[in-house]
Image (cartoon, rainbow, N blue to C red):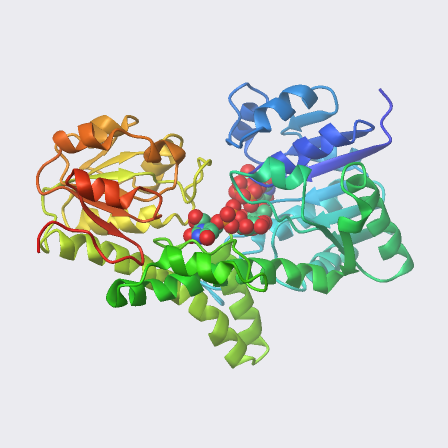
Length: 459
Ligand code: UDX
Ligand code: UDX
C-alpha cells in the first residue's frame, strides 16, 4: 500500500507504544513504525503478550499491527525511510555528576539525535514527545545542524499528557494537544504537518499551537501543578488527623468551588509515577540555574511534602503496631503507583516496603498486575517477602493490611472472612481512602486512613 507519510517513533515504552497505536488507528493513510534499542521489548510488541498493560491497548494494537503499525528493531532503515520522527526515549533524572538528583539525563536524547544524523538521507521533522527540560530543542537542533550535510531537521515539541491507566482514553479524547514550533516559515509549516495528523480525530479547537519554548515549559508546569494539588491536599491531612476533621469532606467541600475544581484532590500516601517528581525537580533545577531561588524553593516543597507524606504513613504503621513490626506478617495491597497499570516507577509502595523490611516485618505483597515489577524493585532485599497474587492468601495470619494502590478489587473483598484468619488485634492502613472505614471498624478492624481520625478499639 502507498502511504501518505511515514511516521517513526523512537522509544517503544509507556508513551511511544500507546501514542503510536492510537495514531495508526486514526490515520490509516500513514505508515507508523516504532523502534527501540531493546529488542526484547520489540519482540513483545510483536507478540500477543504486549510489554505494557493499558485498558483498550490490546484491541487497538490488534486492529492496526501489520496493517499500518509496525514494531521493529531495525533503527537505521526506519530512520532513513521516515518523514516525521517522534522521539519518546526516556529522560530519567541524572544520577551522577553536575545536576545529579535534579537535572534530566539527556544521554539517550543525544544518542538519538546522533543516530538521526547518521542514517538520514533527506530532511525530516523531529518531534519531541518525551518530557524534557526547557531548551532541549535548542540542544537537539545544534546537534542536528552541526553535521547535517545540508539536510534540514525542524524540531517540534509535542508533549504527552497521557496518564497511565487511562492512556488510550487520554489519547483518543485529549483535553488538548500541544504543538510548539519556531515561529519561522519552516517551523510553522512543520507544525502544520503535526496538526494535520492530530486533526484526523481531535477537534481543531483542542489543538493548541505555541512557540517551542512555551510548549516545552507547559509540559513541566502541567505536571508541577497536578502534583502540587496532591501535595497541597496531603499537607492538610496531618492537620485533619490531629483536629478531628476528615480530609475527604474537605476535598469535597473545596472541590465544589468551580474555581478550584474537584480533580486531583484525593489525599494519599503520596504520589508516584515516572513523571511528577522528575519533572518538578527539573523545573527546580532550571529555575535555580537562572538564579530564581524563590521559584525553585517554592516548587521543591511539592516534592518535599510528598517525601514527608510517605514517611509519615510508614511511621503511623510502625507506631500504631506498638512500635514494632519485627516478624509480623504485613499484607501489602497493591504495589503499582496507581491503579490499572503494571508500572511501579517511583511508587510509594517501594519506599513503604523498604522501610518495613528494614524494620524486619514479613511482607506479603499482592497486586493484580504489578508483582513482576515489584520483584524487580525489591530484588536483593526481598528474602522475607512473599509475592502472592491472591489477596486472601496474602492476609492469612497477617497482623495488618497496608493498602498502597486503589485497585477496584480491594474494595470488594470479603473482609469478614479475611479478618477471621488474621492475627489479633487486626490493623488496616488505607493509604488511598478507598475502603469503607466504618464498616471495617464495626467488624473488628482498627482502621487508620490518611487525613482522618483513627477508628480503633483500644480506648
Ligand atoms: C519516557 C519518559 O520517562 C517520560 O518523561 C517522557 O515523557 C516520555 O518518555 P516512558 O515511555 O514511560 O516515558 O519511558 P519507557 O517506558 O522507559 O520507554 C522509553 C523507551 O525508549 C524504552 O523502551 C527504551 O528502551 C527506549 N530507548 C531508550 C531507545 O529506544 N533508545 C535510547 O537511546 C534510549
Ligand atoms: C502524569 C500526568 O497526569 C500526565 O498528564 C503526564 O503526561 C504524565 O504524568 P501519571 O503519572 O501516569 O500521569 O498518573 P497520574 O494520574 O497523574 O497520577 C500520578 C500520581 O499521583 C499517582 O501516584 C496517583 O495515585 C497520585 N494521585 C493522583 C494522588 O495521590 N491523588 C490524586 O488526587 C491524584
